[in-house]
Amino acid sequence: MILKPKFYLNSNVVEVARLLIGKVLVTRFENKLTSGIIVETEAYAGTDDRASHAWNGKITPRNRVMFEQGGVAYIYLCYGIHSLFNVVTNVAGTPHAVLIRGITPLDGVDIMLARRGKTYLKPSDGIGPGKVSMLLGIHYSHSGLPLTGSESSSLQIWIEDRGALTNGEIRTTTRIGVDYAGKDALLPYRFVMDIKKAPINGAF
Picture 1: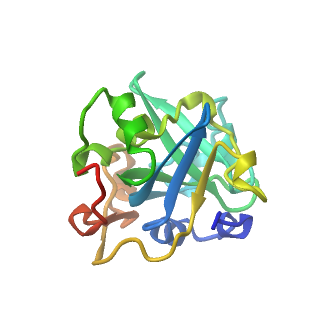
Picture 2: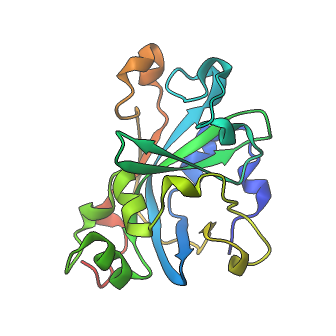
């Protein structure tokens, strides 16, 4: 069920972003397991993509993990508040990444409610990359954690394929909040599953 290393070594980051729709993002921190169905992603195509943190080959202490072999987490702090979770893909030295922008809560809803200080969750509570991390307990200090392993017991963050958990069309659009990237802001690198067509669980 855990995605194998081969999945993350795909050289086509846009294809990976599309394939991640419907997969399940799982975390286990302090023996608290939570998960959500991935319903929104964005691809960032490395050194040639002006919207990417690695555009033009720039390496910084923050983005260095993007240059590692695919299958690790790249998590950065946005606006000094939100931890945003990305999946690093491709071979070492090619800094491709997929931002997970939205989930539908699945496992550990009670834990998610406590993290958000709420008594119930709306479908929109998992939409937005900052909300994804808050629900799943992901923090920017987790950047660099492996997403693959022979057993989930050795991992804190991983992604599973549990079969067809979503239905309906997946829309392809331009990315959000990257107007600074010029013509690259118009690239069709965002994929969205209508949350109205995602499974409804006890949280909603």
